[in-house]
Image (cartoon, rainbow, N blue to C red; front, side, top):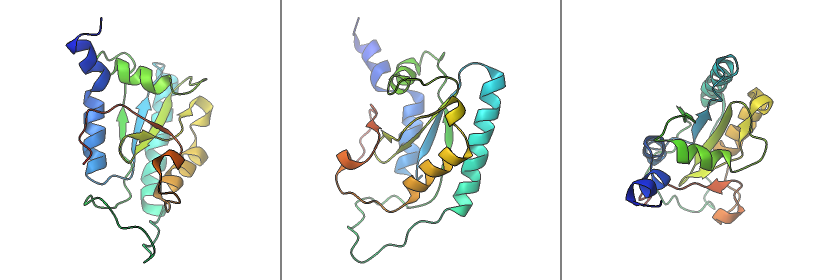
Length: 167
């Protein structure tokens, strides 16, 4: 039944609150890691993700601001930072969020990672054998690169449900 408690779980969770806090503090993207529950797959995938993101934080460069660029509408600092947060599929507080993420695409098997940016928009999922250094680097470079569109609908990805006042 959709009562107040059930609605609260659908709209909010500890990981969503921490993701929003970090995005509002200026992190470029928060990477959500959903382990599959098989330690032999999860541990190397998480280590690969964290290691590659740490490398990218120092090797990627933010594009220079040009006079023709639209003004920044946020007071959050602009910095290259890619923290990783775990979203456990078996955590009751995160079950609705995990289901939302995993239902966003087909074939999301094994460990899965989602970079979340802006006001809670998730870029494409990296899953199983698709979660490797090259795809992590491609997503991070896209997120650190110059924005080529002014309309949110032109950005790839999907909006996630957050109970956050982004303004």
